[in-house]
Image 1 (spheres, one colour):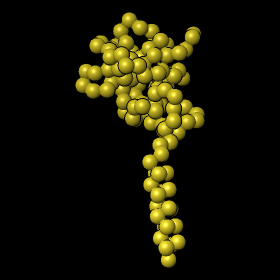
Image 2 (image 1 turned 180 degrees about the vertical axis):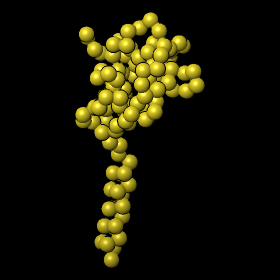
Image 3 (image 1 turned 60 degrees about the vertical axis):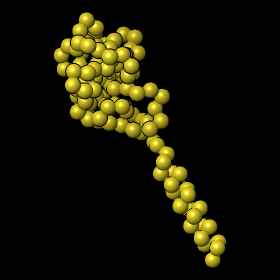
Image 4 (image 1 turned 30 degrees about the vertical axis):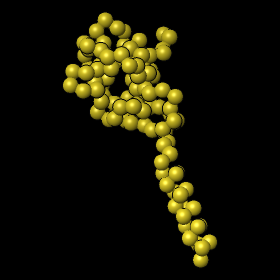
Length: 109
């Protein structure tokens, strides 16, 4: 009788522990736009250029990274150019009303 109770408690304990584990294990937060990966920075942008696209897919499991996807921003997040900066170097995402965050490319082209 006691064995069955301990077994149930042990199983419950493992279920609780495993349910708290996240599958998101990325090294850095990113957006993939125009087949280039842009890493999220902590730099705020005051003025953006024109709207480039929107995030089409939120991904939380490592693997193939489709274009217009992100592991940080949800579907519909707007992607913008930044005035005076080539989009191969950096872009911005809208995070609130008139609030934008800079994303930087590691592309060496």
